Amino acid sequence: MDIKELLEDLSKKVTDPSFSELAKSFRSTISQTRGLSNDEKRELYQQFNHLWDERKAWLENLKHEQEQQAMELDYQLDAVERSLESPDFIEQSRLFEKEFRKIGRWADEQKHKLWDRYTAIKEHRSEYIEKTGEISGTMKNTFETDLLSIDTVFGGAPELQPDSHWERVGSRIQESRDKLRDIRKAIDSDIDLLRHEKRILFELVDTVRAKIKETETLTFQNHGKRASELYEEAKDIVEHSNPGKAAEFLKELQSNIRMLWLKKGEKDKYLNHVEELWAALKDKRRQRKDQFQDWLEKQKEGLVKLKAVREKAYETLLRVQKNLEDNRQRFSDAKSPDFSEKLEIWIREGAAKEADIQKSVNDLDKKLAEIEDKLKKHGMNEVHATAAVSHRESTAEITPDETALPCAEK
Image 1 (cartoon, rainbow, N blue to C red):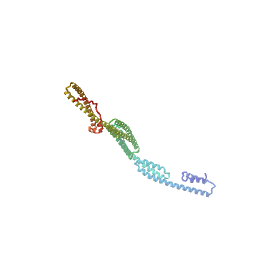
Image 2: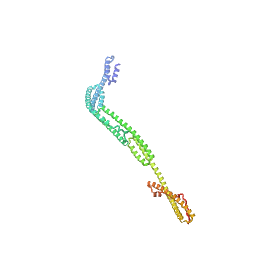
Image 3: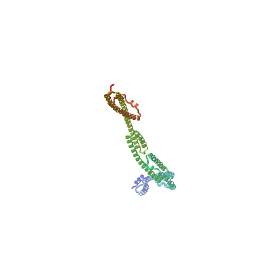
Image 4: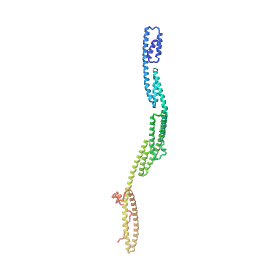
């Protein structure tokens, strides 16, 4: 490489560590080069000296920058020292060491002072850790005791809990979850706990949370199964039992569904099913009411018709009895044997007819009494029942099988 190429290379590497070696090479080469006039050498030296001045200015600026960095690191050490009793000490120390390695050799004196100060702070930190290790251990034991005291089985729930206690299971699950959250916050904010002991406690927090979740999942499953059983039972009762019993069961079912520890969506689903059963029960009540009204109208109509039949039968009975009485009187007054014989036959026939009609009247009275008893049970009476039927129905032509008895002429 000739002298001019060396000079050009130097101009490109003013800030490069290889500048010094290239400068030596330039001086050696220019002194050995022949054929250059003094003026040419002088001009080359002037260019070289200009580059060297640029190099010195750059080095001076670099030294100033490094010294400035050292001053800034001194302030950063203040932050490290302030965090000596804080969990932030490790992070502050890492930041200091990272920036310290960036300082070049031009600030060696400042670097030595900074490192000595940093070493002293670390020694103080070790003394603090040794002193606070016992405090951290005590706090760790306290938090462990609190965590292990959290209820994660809830009295054997859900297998060992009766229905009346299921609501308590849900509340206790929530209480355990809240207590765990509060303890975790306390661990996270405790400045006396060492980092590795915090990590152990957080692992225990995760273990307790998993146990609570496992029990809650099992509770969801068992309570969901119970909700399904209650719902199926309610469907059967609504379909096959009387409305009063069904209504009582649905009220109890709604209370149980709200009490059971179910997932929100599942609880809403069953509550909607209960509303559907209430609607079905309402339809059933309306149908039964309509059926009862039909039955009631038929009973009232039957009552009026039976009364009409009974009245006609009774009128017939009175006529038969009157005719029978007349024939008996005539028999006692008869003088003709032939006529007495006829009267005797008529009297026997009249007595038989009287007995038959009396039995019919008695049967009708019994049927009327039965109907009136049914109506009384439903708040009706004979007057109401009779008034509810039209005049046309009350005068319908319904007559018993009637045979007129002969009567002798005077």
